[in-house]
Length: 586
Image (cartoon, rainbow, N blue to C red; front, side, top):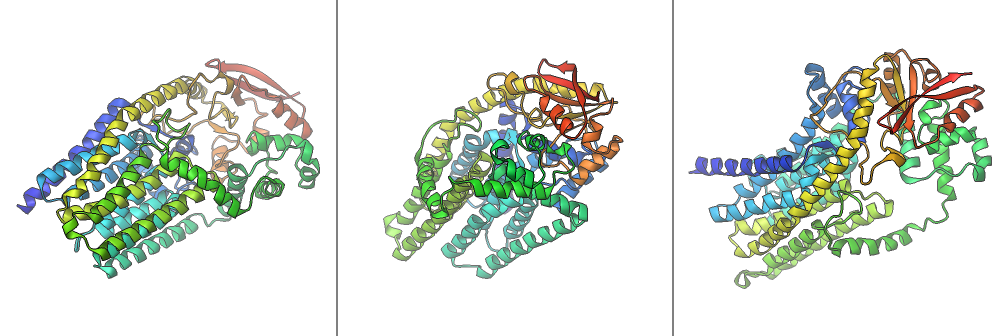
């Protein structure tokens, strides 16, 4: 009987996972969501340097080194894309299985199964197709939290949860740390509501902390060379300048720029992000500009005022109901916010009913734990709003963490046979069902915008492939957008997964960005026989690529200030969007 029940649970779970895979696959195609994931993939696959590299800068070393091994053994497959998709559907399988396995009655299994299926499709259908490593990390963290909260004595859920947290931390450490407070609240809620296995939950928490320390130590060892240490000084300074500060105007701040030895044309390299061309722009330069920009900011209120100002948009996002207009911007939190609200009400409902089973102590405990969860989520939301870093790859995992914790609380009541649990479950199912058409419309619109983008960038990359004897340096903003030549609604650059996969050495690179000046960049230059970007651009077989709609005088101004008089000539154009320019000494 037990084996039959186990087989049924696995069949239902596999069916749910398969339906999601098929449905989203029919509606759209798999993409790396952002160009960051594309560059990470290129580094891991060997497309960047010619050899699969374990240092992909964004992930912690152990996981990137492991993925690179797959590329070394079998070079052709898109292992990074496979890896991210596998993790996401593993999370679907794990959540669905543990929802169903803990419900004894078949009718109840059906209700929970339908809810899980609709919830994933109604909230995350687009994330399954436009895959991003930050969101995948959030899914792993949420799944681990749910496994801990649905744990039964003597099962392996706690160990599996620790493994998922470890993988999430290696994948995107910042995102895991952001969700970690909610994971800890989930552990506390589980123990408080059951009053059992305190030692096991404490062990799980200690193992999680040890796993994080182990991952960080391994990463430090992997990046322990002097070259990587110096690069990370630059990387941190670049992050501070471009993500949290701004680049002051040159004319109004000439004295400052003179004091750090930065000319007007060099300052322009910071503005257009092409600072990789100048060997003298280093971590100290970027740090100095970032610190100076921070001092100039007179509009920055004290932290207390910033928090108070963040409350209004925070409350607005909690209550605002509107279908998505596009994949990311303008941003809307529906249906996530309404599902969370329904589950809070559902958790309260299951604590109060049925009346015959009311227990004042348990009611107060449940209310207290829900208040703790709400305080935790509020703190995290206010934090990201104040920092101005709230894209959907961050906000949706926070919602998902909250949803799985609330679902786990309600799920525990179903174990006790409370029919009242189906009120919030049915309500969540209906909201999710109503959101599915909107999700599919968003996917179709986003697919159209990405297909429009690919017409331009596929042509550009075909051009590079057809001219393997040349090397091309791409203006940073050109590498992500066609500028004024961009069609209405056209997406920024990203790659489709599992199509046009070519993991051979790529004869092009961007002129700045987060990998610029890294040991990997130096290795890439050496592979083609180049030394540095400034000198290489003057060679006969090295060209610059920029949108035709943009002026190229900045590059001539830069060389002029370096004492080199150059001619910038358009030698070709691609897709009527991109200009191919030669730069030669007069």
